Amino acid sequence: MKRFTFLIWLLAATAQGLLAQVPSYYNDVNLSLTGMALKDELATKIINTHTHHVSYSELWNVYRHTDSSSPGKIYLIYGWENGHDSDCHNDLERDTAEHGGSAARCEYNREHVYPKSLGDPPLGTSGAGSDAHHVRPSDVQMNSHRGNKKFTDASGHAGPVNDNYWYPGDEWKGDVARIIMYLYLRYGTQCLPRRVGTGPAVDNDRDMLQLFLEWNAEDPPSPVEDKRNEYLERLQGNRNPFIDNPYLATLIWGGPRAEDRWNMAVDETTLQAAVHVWPVPARQQVFVENLSGEAVDYTLYDADGKQLWNTHNESEQTSVPVARLRKGVYFLVVTTGRAAIVRRIVKD
Image 1 (tube, rainbow, N blue to C red):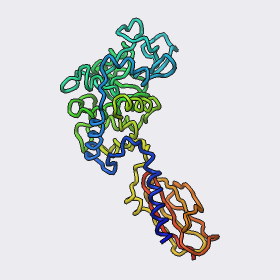
Image 2: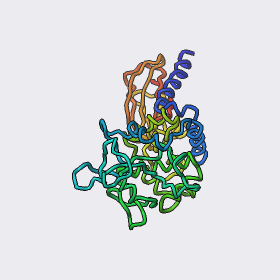
Image 3: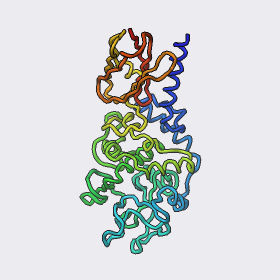
Image 4: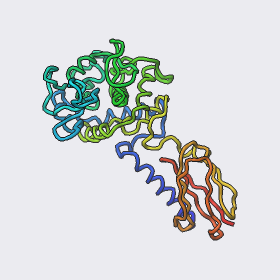
């Protein structure tokens, strides 16, 4: 009975520790889903928790919190340098107070990453058109040059591509992709990704483009995006799930594997089938084969719950030293992200 009680405690404690990696905002979201079921689950969450709708004029003050780079300055989307050339319009930062509509005075304004005219119906300056997860500060001239050009792939800094399309820049393409994904879930058919980008659609959703999945994987979330997400949950009530974990996009639409901040790639069922232990019983060492393709942590406990050994291993096979252990039953806990299993080891 003592061993059985310890085993239950061990699994519960391990699971609690793993789930702690996921923000509490998602406690009522079924993250075991995939595909369109997960898309709908996340959409319901961010719609239902969007309790404060930021006004268009309110955005100026919001930017002081969401996009601040240093005291008195904010980051500008599509920008990449600060005063190293004679062109102020490609600046990465701008004084917070210098907003308005003048390109000549190097002011910044509000950039609809999803152009208003491409929405169906058009976005305007409320709803999706003033959602602070979406509308970002941008240099006036840069904003004008972008206009309502659709996004396309390229490399380097932001700018037009063949005059008809727009590349947001290597340092901003991930931000753009996650904004478009958020808008799609939050506002549905008004903000379909296929109307704002170029290239082929994904297999399971003709409204989502491979372009945005690639950008999401190639340019992971920055500290700026993380800061925005935290503040906007307090302000609007909702979060952008794809900033919290870009891998959610991979689970929904496939494509290249994006950063997995919650280590969701291997679930418990997969891990159970992928981990093999032999020999049982053992005298010198126990071999463990892990075919999941994921790096795992191994922790060995005795029957009283005392930790005896631990290692982190990325290879398919490792060994657990048991030669100096007393005869008896031990428990090997194998963890990867939120998945955890226990294998029983017998020392002969």
